[in-house]
Length: 129
Image (cartoon, rainbow, N blue to C red):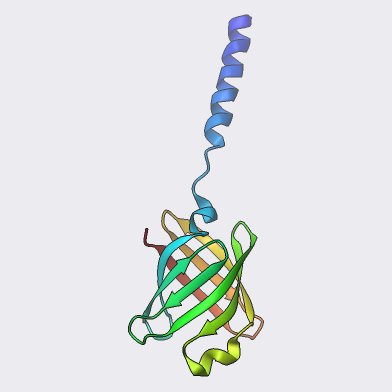
């Protein structure tokens, strides 16, 4: 009987130990270097993200956008536009949008934003480092 009970306990411990190993999930994307292709123009943007800041650079046009990032939940973040070198886009300074990571696959995530300015944004981001 003791062997049977020990066997069952061992099986449960093994099962729960392996079930606790999480895939990297959204936390993998909280900091680092990333890239995405603008769905409207097909131009590639580079992203550098720290715990509190995100900088997006468009090497083709030279546009730079600086944003504050705040993680609302594990897979949801808010970007607040702080500065850009493109004069036409400065009217967006201090506006915020909340983005949701909708799926994760290794070093790639898909996102969406049902933004409060009626703009709908969807895309894919690739982690570069």
